[in-house]
Image 1 (cartoon, rainbow, N blue to C red):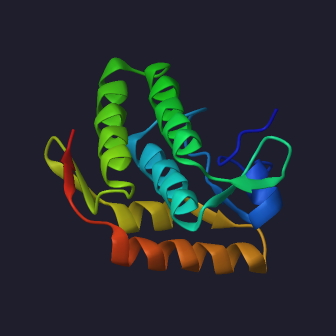
Image 2 (cartoon, rainbow, N blue to C red):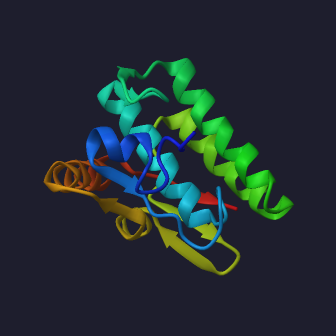
Length: 149
């Protein structure tokens, strides 16, 4: 079964023409990838619709929003304990504020959410390009706050 957000064959790519690039490893292998997925989950919650495992557009409820964010922590736990802690803090912020932070500070480097998400989001077609621009516009105006991981 393909994932919802990650990869060209994801359900999100099939329905909306947009996906999160795989990067180096399977699953949530980096904080940047987790940030991009969390931003898409928050965007779906903002517009109140998402896609399920049957490629159907469904309502994004608060419960589904929290489930998808918490699943990121489980995926990160498969890679490393440190990544799990970082993603856990990111998810806590997103659950509390219902939007991603504008910056994630990891040791000495700061990840700016807009730039990370722009790097990871890929469009499959023209519809995907429109959704990508919509996500990035939403991020510019809604992402606030800083998370230290």
